[in-house]
Image (tube, rainbow, N blue to C red; front, side, top):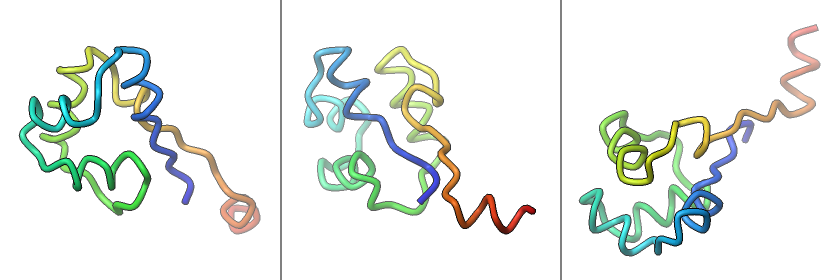
Length: 76
C-alpha cells in the first residue's frame, strides 16, 4: 500500500501510549491499533483531526505516501 502510517513514531516522540490516545480521541484501542499497523483502508477526517489536535502534529507527520513500483509503471 502506498500510504504508510507513522503513528507509532509520533506516539513515541510525544511519549504517549496508544491506549491513552484512543481514550482521548474516543475510539477503541482495536481501531486505533488497526490504524497504526496499516490494516485500515480509510480514516474519517474527524478522527484524523482529533489525533492531530491531541498529538499537536500535522496529518503528514502521521501518514506518508510512498509510491510502489506498479504505480510508477502505470503512470508511464
